Length: 428
Picture 1 (cartoon, helix red, strand yellow):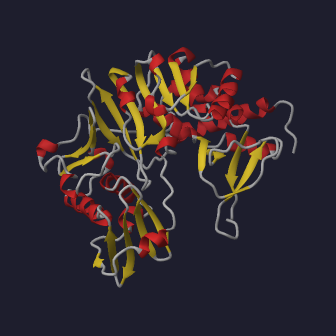
Picture 2 (cartoon, rainbow, N blue to C red):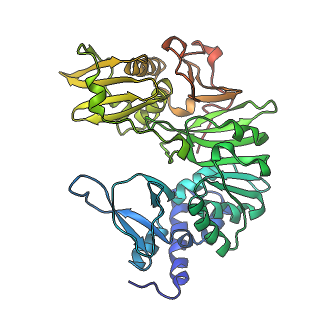
Picture 3 (tube, rainbow, N blue to C red):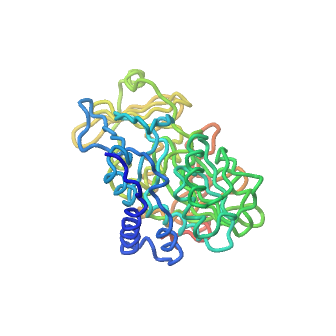
C-alpha cells in the first residue's frame, strides 16, 4: 500500500489518542512532558521497524515482519503511536527499508523504546528546566526529541555508538526543528567536550557504572542508568554525585530492561554439551532450583541481578531438561538436572558458580526477601557496592578477576552496612 501524500493529518489524531492514553495510565503526570508528547511526531523517527508475527517458524524462531508506510500504511502509523517498543535493527545490521525482508530470529540491537518507559526514565532522573542533559543511546531519536521539546535543544547532548543509527536520528531531529549536540561516541566514556552535566540518562545498560559518567556530572547532579550482565539480570539505579566524586543512590523498583552497551554484550560460549561433558560424575543436591532466578516474577527478576553480581562472568542456557551455567573467563561450569522433587548440581572450575548463587539466595531469604528499592548503590573510586541493612555488601562487577567466595561480602551484616543515602525512598 502506498503512503498517502499527507500522513501528518492522520498522525495528529493518533498522537492525541496516545497522549490521552498515556495520561490515563499515569505516565504523563507532568504537564510539561504531556505537552512534549503532544508535539513530537513519533512517526518521523520510525520510518521502518519490525513487529513479531503471531506464530514462530518451523524452528521455533520468532518471525519478524518489516513494517513501513509503503508496505502497510495503516499498520505502520498505528504502531508508531502505540505504547510499544519498535525494533529497528538486528545484529548490528542496518535494514534496507526500501526493500526490507522478513527476519527469522536474531538479536535486537536498536529500537524506539515504548513512550511510557521513555517518559518514566526522564521523570525518574528528575529532569527539569535549566538542566544540561547527557543522553546515552540516541537510537531512533524520539527520546531525544522529547527532551529537546521540554528543555530546549541547546541543553541536550545525545550519544550513539552506531553512525548509521545516528545519521537516521539526526535527519529526523533536524526535520522537526531540533538541534541538540549529537555525537558518534561510546557511552561508557561520556562526552568530555560538553561536561559537566546536571543529568546523565542512559537508554542502554552497563555491567557496572562507567567512571567517566560520574566524573562528567556536576556535584549534586544525578545519573540514571540500568545495570545488567551476562545472566540478563537488570537493576536501575539513580545516583547523586557528591563534591568528592562519590556517587550514591537507590535501586528503583520495577522490571525494566535495556539492550546492553555493545562493548558489554555477552561473548559466545560454544556448545553447552561440551561444557557439561567436562563436569564430574558426582552430583550434590542443590539447595535451590534455577527457577529462583528464572521464574517470570518480579522477585526472580530482581534476584537474578543480585546473583549475577556473585557470578558476573556466568551465562545461563538450557540443553533439554538440563540448565547449564558457563563462565568463559575462568573456564568454570555448572549443570542443574531435575531429580525427584528437587535438582542436582555438578560443578567444575575455579569458581563454584551455583554455590555462589546459593549463597546470594541464602542471604536474600534470611533478610526477608527485600525488593530492589531497599538496596542502595555506592560508587567510590574503583569500588561499587550494593548495600542493604540486613544483607552483606555485594560487589558490582567492574572487570578483573572474580574474587574468592570468602570476599564476595566486603561489608559485614548489621546496621553498619546500611543502604546508601536515599535507598528505599523511591522510584516511580
